[in-house]
Structure formats: structure tokens, C-alpha cells
Image (tube, rainbow, N blue to C red; front, side):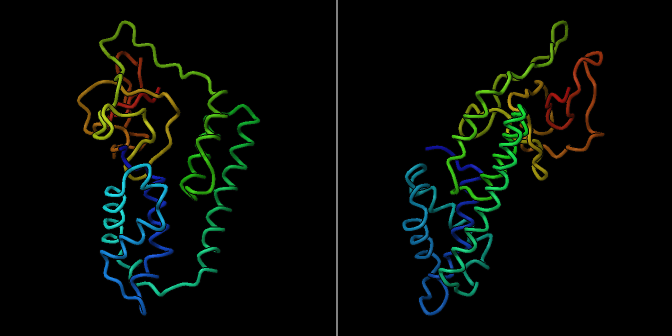
Length: 226
């Protein structure tokens, strides 16, 4: 059972926004616990199949705790739900269109960034991994900074709690979440943030050349910015 991705959590948010009031508001007036059950069992089947019912149920309950307005919002008609989803899908389609232009122009990093944005706009719209695989066939390998002659090393694996060891860097910063080119490594060191995804030092002024100006590093997390 894997951890939930940002796209998974956005899927849960969309379901809660569209359906929570249908169960919690008048005239049905179900308690939150039953609303969570219905949302989990009847609207998030794909996520429960992938991650398990218990994890998705907890994630739904956590989202509703953080967004009680989804429970108290007025009930909406199915037509409005379809309109909401159509708007999300249209936004994702626009990102994929621009991603294709970058793909044709042999700009894989830009294409992958836009595919990521498309998935976050409407996670259920397409099989986005299929688009990523097509781009990655053309993605050149990332050339890491040559650390020969220095006492620096690139961290081989990143210590994310789940799964462990963690995947490559996905974004930089806990708030701005700037996209990071695939394969960009982290310099080992006692940095304030354990991983770039948790870094708060994302300003340009918070980088420093080290090892006789061999590597430009983020002083908040060690991300190789050379």
C-alpha cells in the first residue's frame, strides 16, 4: 500500500466538494461518519483499490475536518457537478495541449512539468503516466555536477517516510513547490530541510557556491542548483 500523491488528494478534494453535501445536507442529514463511508465506497473506488479502504477513509475524514464547508454547503444538482468536472477537464486538456507543443519541440522537461499541472487540474481526466512515458522516451539523461576532487557527494536516495527510501526530487519548496528537472540530485549535508519538498529557502538569494565554486547549492536543503 503506497502513500497518497498530490493528485490522489486532489481527487479526494474534488469528490468532497461535489458530493459531501449530497449526504450531509438536508433532507438526508447523514452524520459525518456515514458521509465519509459513502464518499469512500461509492465515489473513490479507484483509490480504494490502489491504496486500501482504510487509508482513503482516513484521508476523506481528514479533508472534511480541514474543510467543513464541504459538509455545510448547499446541495447541488448533478448538472452542476458535470459542469464542474467539465471545467476541470478543459483546464487539464489545455495543459496537455501545451505539453504536446513542447514535446514536438524536443523540450521534454517543460512537457513533463505541464503534464504534472494537467494531472493536478483534473486527476481523473486521462492516464497521465501514459503521456509521461511518451515524453520520457525522449528525455536526455541529466548530467550531474562533477564532484571529482571535492569532499562532496550526491545523496543516492532521499529519506521520505513512506515509501522508504524515497523517490527522486519532485518539487522544491513546501509552499511554492517549484518543479525540478528529473534527476536533479541533492548534495549530502546537514541541511535544515531533510528533502527539497520540505524546503522553505526557495529565494534566489538563499543559494551558495561551495567547493571552490564547483556546486551552486540551496542552503535550505542541499538541492544541486548548478
